[in-house]
Image 1 (spheres, rainbow, N blue to C red):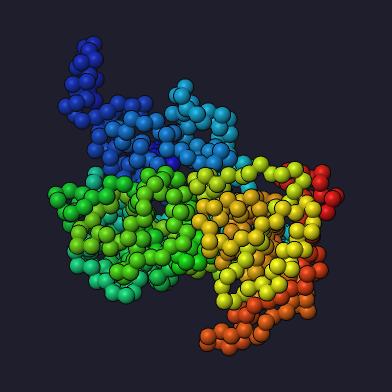
Image 2: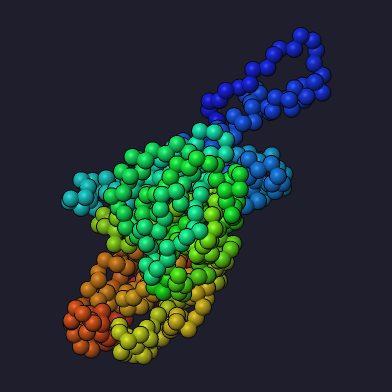
Length: 568
């Protein structure tokens, strides 16, 4: 968000005794290092200090990474040139970046002028956001005892748990832990429990890296090896250590943050200076879509907190081991950065200084999103997860195909793993193909590149698969689609809750006597387990559920061909 300098000290200038020429005025300004604006005369150093202080004093829209352009006089590109967002998101972005909206209004070449008529649009977390202009509202069908007394109360709780109200709560939690006092100083501001932090002029000394086999070593940095030149509130920092855990907070990494006696960016204190804004992330399992997309969702939420969606940023994987990182979904990073992901070990044996850094929200935070998060029952459809889906699909250039008239596209995702295979899959597929309006596709995503996977998913109306991480693809289904978890293997909340977050309809197997397990299942240590066997399904019951899902699709208000639902 643009800096708002509401109070400042103006330079006092002697009143001229005679009429002054423009040359005399300019010479006085150069001699006193001041500039003139609508407020009068300001000293250049005063502006620098105010801009630094603004970063930590205004957590609800303080310096986002976009704002580097505001103070970068060398940047000749228009302020709007970095906007690369879905059309629906642009007025919301401009609402939070009014300086860019003003630039656009004045520039005849700005391609975003039509969105200037919608500047009241807001995500919901902004201080000036009017309820009627929010991006969206969740829907609750009833109030569940123990959660809320009214449907409206349940909707408010759900909005704070899993929608843009979650961002608002984070913004309200932001506190300054290390405060700059002069130009060129550092800063550190964090949410509660150091789950998210922003830093400027950050110093990290990796000349003696203590690497071992632990990916998230908690004593990796000692006193003086991370810090900045700022006034540190050490007690406030220590008080935020309650959630100290590798994928729950940044406390282990920041507990030794030190008040340095030198400015990191001055005097040759850095072997390497990173000018480009940088996001630090600690990642979950890159070989499992469910777990890895906890990383991507939290990165997207962090961008909202930081009011920045610029892809001209570095992403650094914080990993204290020497290992590599297996990533089956690496194409997704292109939605967030124009560059390859950097491993922390790249900086070993150097003192590295980061001009702007964000420590991103983490994938397994307590009451975080979306791993094992308890949600208000009977509520669904969060704008934040829909916006995440739109953002990723847009950045990765995943488009909708022109739908076939009156056809319903059914995608059956198969598993070629040892367990949770559908033993009578061919029977089920044959039954699907007997329905004339079904356009049936059977896919095994392990043989298909991820971008192609997304295209198939995004052009599916009914998506069917047995319990497994592949169901995370529901994020990228169209709004009218139905996700059919063929059998949940007694894990009844995982993908139901994910579907509720995304806002697509969820269905699963209902009649236990019509599903036949191959055996009791054989977990390596827990014994009998429903996730460790294979299954056969009653064909008639299967088709009943699929036809019910098809009715859901065709009755959805966003479905293209509502006139054809009577053919089912």
